Structures are given as C-alpha cells and as structure tokens.
Length: 212
Image (tube, rainbow, N blue to C red):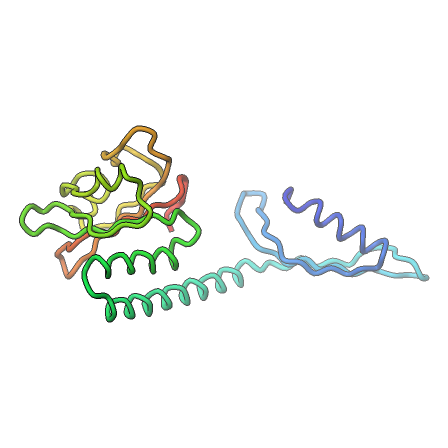
C-alpha cells in the first residue's frame, strides 16, 4: 500500500543493517480497492555472520479487526443505554431529559463527528415538530427549526414516514436553509411508540459521511 511503503522499507533496512525483527499491523487496500488489515512480521536470515535475506510473513487480520470493532460498538451501545437509563431516572423535566439524552448519544455514537444535535417533540394538535432541546446549534438553526411542519425538511420527513432519514450532504430534502450554511450531513431518527411518532432526534455529521 503506498501509504505504508516508507514504513515497510525502513523496517526492512533496519532488519538488514541491524538484524532488527519487526512486527506491525497496518491497513491496506487490495488491487480491487477492498480495505483489509494485515500483520507483517520479518526476521533476518543470518548466514556466516551476515544478513543474507529476510524471512517475512503476511497475515490477513481483517476478520479479527471486524470482530474487535463489533465488540467495541456493542460496548459503546450498552454504555449509552445505561447512561440513558440513568438520565431517565434523574432528569426533572422533558427539556433536561432530551438535552442529556442527546449528549449521551453524541458521546457514544457520534464522537468522531460534529457535536451538534436537536430534539423535537410532536405537537399533538398541529402535527408540527417543536424543538425542545439542542446542542451547539447556530442561532439561525435555532430560529428556523424552532417549529418544523410534518413532511418538511429531513426532520419533518422522519416524522411523516416514521423512518430514519440519512443525508451525506445538504441535498434536495434539506429545505430549511440559510445563507453561508456550513456543509454537513444528517441522521434524523424518529422517536416512536408502536406506530405513533412522538418526536425526532436530529444529529449532524460531517459532509461525505457514509451511512453505517
């Protein structure tokens, strides 16, 4: 892999010069562009007191890394659920509950993305989404998104369909806009009880993010 050519070359040079073995795990891409993880080990071959070659082993660790990632995500999810349970017991009102819940989810699921989110509850009379909590939203967003009609923009679509709305960029569904809005993507998640949509959680992600 071009990203690691110098690192591997340096290890080989040290092996030939100093008889230094190496053991490293690196990400690679196959000839077809598939990402993999591999372990590379190397030991000097010594004959008559001098290094005549290198004995190397290439081991595919992709499945092990995938398993470790699943374990890590499972741990994060459980930690997040435990935190949400703690919040639901201790919060004094809806706004506090939603704000703390948003932060807990950001910390677990969106730690590597924008720390921006909003929580809406459905107005039982009009069907509009009313923002009750938010984290790090711009003044423009707080004003424009204070009340979102059902079916409008990504949050409204999530409320209308009862399905998660994902966007990797500001696309045609992002109907609520303002001048100089910074590029971003979205996860808009409906809060449901059986078939009834009680509200929507909106999380901001970096532009170009792929849906997980």
